[in-house]
Amino acid sequence: MRAELPKPGTVYLVGAGPGDPGLITLRGAELLSRAEVVVHDRLVHPRLLSMAPGSAELIDVGKKPGVPFDQAEINALLVSQARLGRCVVRLKGGDPFVLGRGGEEAQALKSAGISFEVVPGITSALAAPAFAGVPVTHRGVSTGFTVLTGRSGEYNTGELDWDAAAKLGGTIVLLMAVANREVIAERLLAAGRDPLTPVIAVEWGTWAAQRSVRTTLGGLAAAELCAPATIVIGDVAALDLSWIERRPLYGWSIAVTRDVAQAGELSNRLAGAGAEPILVPLLSIEPSSEMLRQLRDAAESLGSYDWVVFTSANSVESFLAHVRDARAFSGARIAAVGSATAAALKRHNLVADLVPQSYSAKDLASALVSDGRGEGTSRLLFPRSARARENLGNALRQAGWTVDEVEAYRTEPIVPDASGLSELARATAITFCSPSAVASYVELLRTGMLASPGSALAGYARGDRSEEPRRQILACIGPTTADAAAEEGLVIDVVARSHTVDGLVDALVERATLAPNGTFRAERQ
Image (tube, rainbow, N blue to C red; front, top):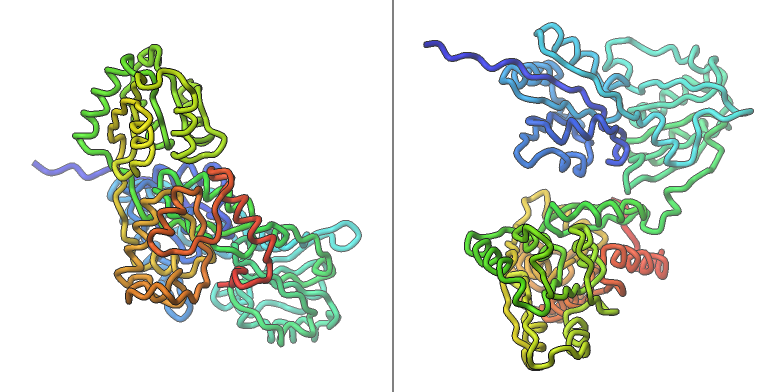
């Protein structure tokens, strides 16, 4: 009997926007979240790729300088993947139909009888100037703009009529024009444009590495520029309504080492402060069958405890997954180590009875002991990480409490791939939200995988902890994590006063504000 062929899938030509992951459309993000295959360009932001399911196949078809990826091969790839019955997202920088060859791909899909949908994106022709504070039109200055490519021959259109472009007036926006800027400037000047016409070139527009170079049409050829850059020519280029450069962490690339499922909040807060979040998870949260059994047993005996103590949002989520009804807590009171843990409880409609003013296990133990209820008689259930320190349990036992500890989750170290290690090494700052992340990082140093001048301790792999040629800032969410780092010989630069994601970002902002041009100022990548 002949096997039935799968029904062809649909290809979605999705505009990824110019770089900043926040600029993708809602439709584009929704399609990414259920993609089975993502065929993406070289300059698509890694955080956009992380929106795809972990099971999705990621295929890089980026056209690298000097190593072009044949467009016919890309077309054939899209057709073949769709014919396997897969949901294919073709993720293209900017807008698929603005100098992005999306039209050619749509033609190929149509000819092959493949269903497709086009999801427009924000083009860098508009986004890069906007992020640099330059409107492409402005009342009394320019009533229109023209978008041109600096590589017209690549699109089989022959030589552009630069005389006509110059005579149109208004604003000219050039894409892919860095290499040919001298010739383009000569043509526009020869066509009558004033050599003093203002020009702004925005490199890496909307990325954390964004840089603006201001010059004139006469000085464009000599300006030091690097691709990718969007070049704006016209009187509007003299306007300076810059805003992104004024964000406190502008220019910083900051590594987020949390588990992938938990990295979103910190990444978003860092991006909001102007930084480029780099997701390099150094650990994952993995339950075991034995843990699940213990959690179920503990959940069934909740009513026998006077207190249930949570020291992380992870422990809240892991434990409450086994509590079918909040009434199971009966007379047990609930303590949380800090506001983030209390917020996790609140999401389950549980309010913590006790949250210490200072968010640490030591302060939580002191607060419980000073509560004064049931000294020597209180029974306490403590769902915790398998790798948690024993400070809290030991302190309460010494005070006469009965403490039952149950492992709620286990963190397993992750060794990043070569790309992740490179990203970690180039980061301006590295954030740690748990001792487990510190331990994973230290192991990378100890094994020499990060033993470079950019590492926190260049001599760590050799066993030499005396030399500290430091470039990167190391930041911890709280004293427990900082203490773990100190025990390993790391020098921590930033410890959040409020031991939350917001507190960590605020502490980094404070550091940047105090020394914006100092040793630890971000280096442009």
